[in-house]
Image (cartoon, rainbow, N blue to C red; front, side, top):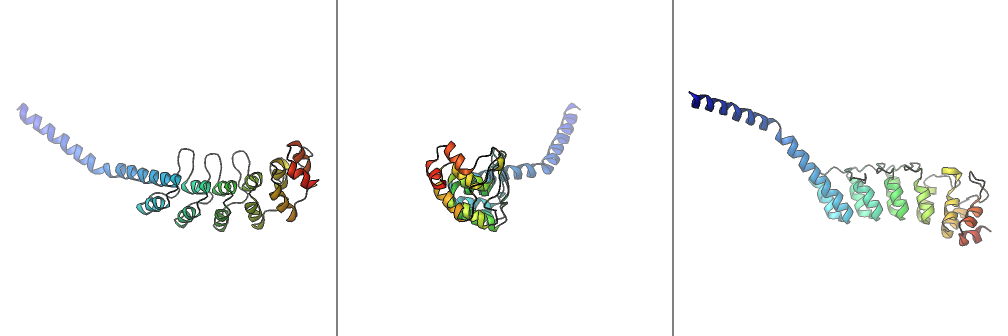
Length: 222
């Protein structure tokens, strides 16, 4: 009698486990596979492996997957200055406006790196010229501060007012003055940058150049 009862109970347990397994395993396994593919995509982007990026995308990786600091594969490609990788990701629908956790967009990353061709690609696909990161910086401020002249001019050509005011009423010319980027300052002046404008402290670009010992720009503005 006990043997029969035991067998019946065991049969019930087996049936319940089979039913449970039939309902639940596939979603969990799919999630694990997706996470693995997304990780492959991000690792390939970080390694500069264009073929690996394409392979992960073909296998089903989510193009806008993000790592722990919020970088997508596209942001990583922009930081590396890899045009082919950026093109491959945008072709697969990468969001050109997706920022990392610090608010840095692909356009800001490319502008900082001086990747002019990538900047052009991003702008052609709808990148936001006016986006700001968590500290309020824009792509123009990154480019001007780093002396990325080609990018600065491309941003102006894309529609940015050469005398636009940024944080603290700083202009792009003032940013170049603060970091002694004289080639960029010359280019901005040639496009109509006004050296007499003042920031919220009442300082001109020349004042900022003098304060920061940016002698090349100071001489240029003098």
